[in-house]
Image (cartoon, one colour):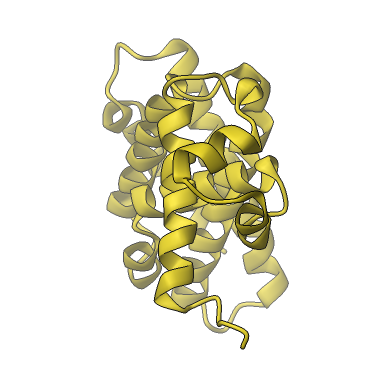
Length: 186
């Protein structure tokens, strides 16, 4: 009998593996965490781990994506319009996510984290743009979503590196008028 990936037992086991990984990441650097560490922490066997995840990098990708989606409350954002308040809220969520990760993930994984953030932002911005610009060409909206995702991610990196004396809200607010005037002409 095959079980569906939505079976509650499978979902619980997947969450157990992810929670075990998060717990271990608070104690060890990612490069030092092994599948054996995770299976021991979760009290499961290797086959169960590999049923849910291809490898430890797939697990990292899934954990970061889910944590980011929770931070962004992506479903809520997809229902909202793209405006000053939503851009500020997205920026704050991204900076909060990066702050939370700074104590767990080390520099070697910045590219993975950056890719995950940009991909999730692109999905959110594309949904918001489609909602507001239903007559626009789909490809133009996708390109605009890519530009916005890279821009917001880049701004969050800049804030994290150099501008911590300003709150994330204060930092992004200065750019909002310029962003919004460009967005309104998409």
